[in-house]
Amino acid sequence: MEKVFYDGTPKTPGVDFDGDKGELRLKGRSIPENSIEFYKPLIEWLEEYVSRPQAITTVNIQLEYFNTSSSKCLLDLFKKLENLSKKGNEVVVNWYYEEDDEDMLEAGEDYQSIIGVPFKMIEIQE
Image (cartoon, rainbow, N blue to C red; front, side):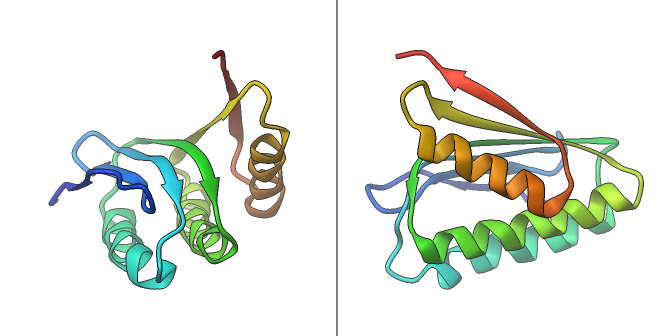
């Protein structure tokens, strides 16, 4: 399966989706001009991955900030992961947040309560 890799920009997160390893990573800021356009290939990649997943899928989310339209796209990604989990595959979501960023911690907790996949909240020490 093709790997997806984008370097982060001031408006878009770095992306590293590696289907052979079962590892997905988003890192940085997510405030693209068009969130749907940015996330659409990632969601399509994940749909293909779900059809032939690894035994364990590890998702590392380390966002500094995301806007409202990105939050909807992230939810769409997480729903694909929820479907994978419901099929009996192990899904681990590591949600990173800076120690003084309660908003980002709450965002991770909110996603966890919506999708029913366990999140590990990991505080980043500055």
